[in-house]
Image 1: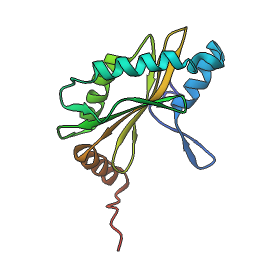
Image 2: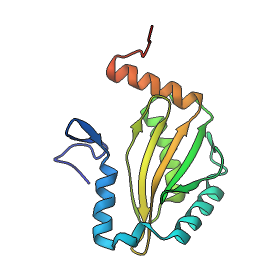
Image 3: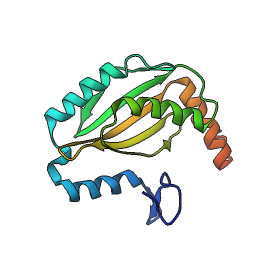
Image 4: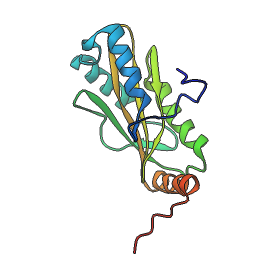
Length: 160
């Protein structure tokens, strides 16, 4: 999904606040497949159980606790075991994870917070879908996030 030729990972600005494109993609999928598309609790539980199994042995990262479903959204917390040297390394790790859990339909974007790298996503099939986020955490993710923010904003985040 492209927005006037721009990278699909950009966020749209509405009224001065950032809006994740993934939410627009979810709205479109709900219009196409119906409001119940994301609300199949059994499908979400199977997705979480399968995610736990296939994400248990990923090189360079491991699960923090079990994947969970909160308010109909899947949350998968990942501890990054090795330094993320650049944005490609972060994306490569995330897409290694997604390659194991994504279904027929799939969309994600990258959101870099102060100490984490988040990948909100939506995936599914014509029958049901799953929305949520993979959150890359730990000292290596926090170090990368800080370096990225310093590079893009010039801020060092020091407060007296």
